[in-house]
Image (cartoon, rainbow, N blue to C red):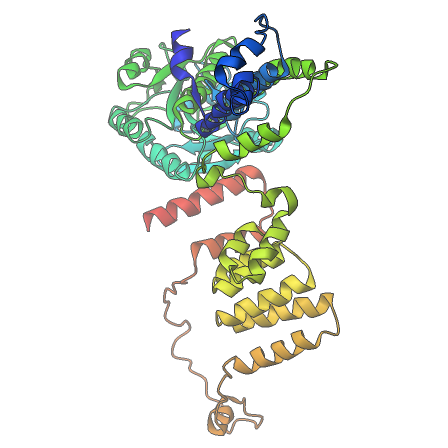
Length: 534
């Protein structure tokens, strides 16, 4: 009860000024019923006392009492009492999760059947079933770190790439958890919803612990880290290709063990960890931690909004208002309306009551200000994108005007967009906009004239002189003599470096790719590792 009272506050406290109407109404009633004050001007006061018969005072419910109660409850309801908070609509209500899967060679150990990696993939599939409708991203890492999938809710796509993962895909051997954490942090830098990073690994190297600590300090109020250990403390041999096993320099099999104590020590760095279990306890623990982290951040997040609880008062207001239908009851509504109008002081700008809202739509209000030259105010009122764009043009804000026109695909919108682009000096884009307008409305003389004018403003490409053209023309006459160089069978080998943008190379490669998901990932990881090395 104490916490509820401390959290109680009002969203619109200026509505409490309406309570001043209650004493004004009661005072006016008392004044109207004062017979002595009414006749004192006409009858001597000593005689008046003998002429007045004082009525027997008995309290009874009257219309003025219900009206005052309605005003009091209404003012409280309009003030917006609140003591709870909620997320605004269209925000993420399920916690996003980034899974970082270890693809180092030790994940091929067979202490878990069939291997650690395959068992980890089964657990990830079970986790996805628990996260129906939630966004999940997938990273893999060994000596290098790579994103497999960004945030997605398409679990069939997730399954396609998850099933193709193997340790052979990684271009660099080893295990670099710090590099994986840096790649994920860079991926999450523009993410607004608080999320969780789950490392599915058979070990965390000591040098990565400090990176974990620094990450949590930088993202204390946003992202969290969980670790799922894969493997057993007894360990097992590491399988390689052809049913062979990894051996050391002496020819002995290498056994990879899960350091359970190291997982337990992660808690002192603020990192919760669990080990892979045979049942679903680990899955439920992870999902519970992920969702709890989201809720904990949302409770202190400024993006949450208070819940207006004033609607609960509509129930007693409706009950009291029912008494106003009693026969013989009447209220002087004129005085009540005047009290409402004159008692309320000017409210803050963002809450100011506008009488214009009662009679004019937003576009009509915008047109009202537009015709009076208040273009900035008109642009704020217009809901129609074309009118809003025209108002922004009048203010000289052509960039925002173009954005407004782009919301419509009509001929008028394209025409006005061309005008705005022309004012910004973007003549080729303006010509294209006029062309779009003429496609939707033809003939249109104004658009044609404007397009012709803008075309004339585009700088002409200077023509080459005749001598240069003759030099570039291929000769049509046969050669006088042909000589062959037989001294060398081969030319000198030189390395030609292509200065292509990596994104351009990736786009060309993606358009021509015809391969399996595993080959696709192997080549992509190799390209990314080469780019990082350069």
